[in-house]
Amino acid sequence: MSAPDNFKTLIHTPADLAVEFIDYARKIKANPGISWGVPSMDRAIIPMRPGDVTGIIARPGHGKSTSAAYLARHIGKQIAEQGIKDQCVAYVTFEQSIEEIESMFEIEGDSGYDLSDVAWGRADIDAMIKASLKRLSLPVVLIGKSQSRRKQTPRMTVDNVYRALASLEEDYKVKPSLVVLDYIQIIPVEKASDRVTQVGEAIVRSKELAIDIGAPIVFCVQASRKVDDYGEKIPTASDCQWASAIEQTADKLIGIWRPVLTEEPDAVLNIGGREIKITQNLFIARLLKQRMAPAGNTFVLNFAPQYVRLSDMELNNIDLETGNLV
Image 1 (cartoon, helix red, strand yellow):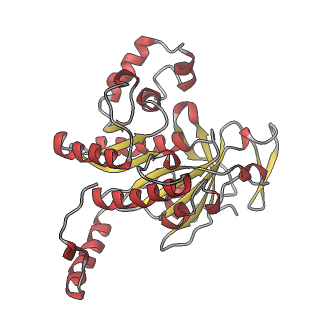
Image 2 (cartoon, helix red, strand yellow; image 1 turned 180 degrees about the vertical axis):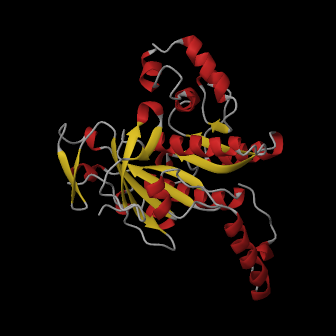
């Protein structure tokens, strides 16, 4: 990542700040920021703004990538509906191939197939072609390794991702309004001496990247195995595998849990003093941290991973003002 050599630009005098801070406040007031499109969450979580980094923490298979893809598609649709031609969402994958991630952006309720159909190879090709044509209008760009370009792409380091994002602006004339990094613990950092150092450096540089490109970043975080022993298997901020730097650097952290994957079918959970029956689509999210506002809110959500959908669960025990269980 290149940087200017003029170190004086790092200094902000009181006179500079008098202008810069008011300009910052005006931009916040004029820009609604990035929200989830889930009413209970949007009432409690401050919108994501340029320079923010938000972590989604979960055990493997509990919906990190899918919930991040849901958010990317939600914001992509907003950009398209508003007719903004010079903005996009950038989804960066360090783990899966571009083709695997793309399947989450092709799926819609009327597509005639879901993610499992794609994985099994039983999705109708004609239906997939129609979905792909519809997908052309969704301004979500994927950055990562492709099965069709196996020997052509450079290593997926933070520096190369930065160069790819810069190329979006320089060569494609679009600027990311949101960047997703999936997932933070496997981002390669050159010259890091060990895994903990590598992950810590990756999160710090991701924060720098968010500020440099002027967009919020959402990154997926693998939770440690000790979460499996919890009664409520919602990861805490201290459960970020490999690095406490994630807990320290992130502006917001959200822990997620799909109870159907860990509990007995049709069992009843006690969440926040309320009994909730486990269903296939029950999805529990908890706001673990957010700067400048209270955290701790628990959200009972409906999650349909096969269609990349996330919404509020219709329950009578949710406070509509705060999103908390009551």
